[in-house]
Length: 342
Image 1 (cartoon, rainbow, N blue to C red):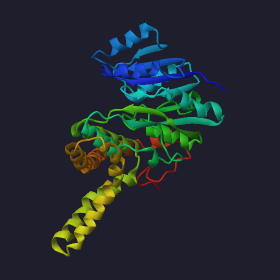
Image 2: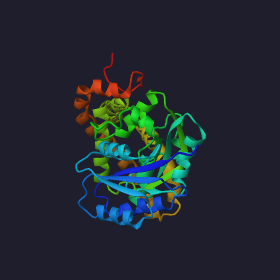
Image 3: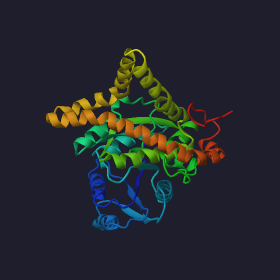
């Protein structure tokens, strides 16, 4: 069955990165029936660029202005206005592979009961720091379990009727809204598929300050949505209890405790270093050394940012627990969600 498809995205102050996304939409092997982009209040050249592409006529592009809207509100506005039976969602600033939309749609059109298809995303680093960042925080295909994969809003398609069954994305959630959306669809029994060839490329954060802000906000969203409680508790236990105890034993008892610390560090960084290997061959030795040294710094920074962000959102999450449970549905029962659940 061939569906009509609407590609949607939300933007704000994306500037010239808009061209990257729009140009890659123009070159798709399967063109969308429409493209709807919601601007949440840009004050740079974003709207001028959108207007330029809309007037050029290379894309069936519509632009909606929703001043002050958050990402969930913007997506809901775009989808409500969309005519397509399938909604394909991506983000500003990414570069879509030419077969992205074709591959996203394939499982939906070939298997009748598939309702959600997750594509993949890969780093497009421009600096040594971004190489280390991508290797540290982004999975490779070998890391993915398709049965458990929760699609990112950078690359996902779903039937509009599935979106409607949830009354849209949770507009009361400023971050992690796509994770809660995915979980709610899973708990309601919608069938997911994984399309690894539906890839988008994007630049990782280019400095530690931007990375800290990103991961603090993600973790704050986890707190507001009461997501992944056990993961966060394990992180606090590791940094606040286990690591200080190991250091104390290493300093005051047998020196073999340093071996335990070393083994812990190897376990902690093994996946990032494995993902970093393909990038190292093309780097000079000085840049190789820099990339290798950055991995633990980025890893620790991300963990500390999450530890700072989660408590900021948790009080609101506890107040909104009934709303979260209603959104996820009566079948919601996932380890790590809902602290103190009876």
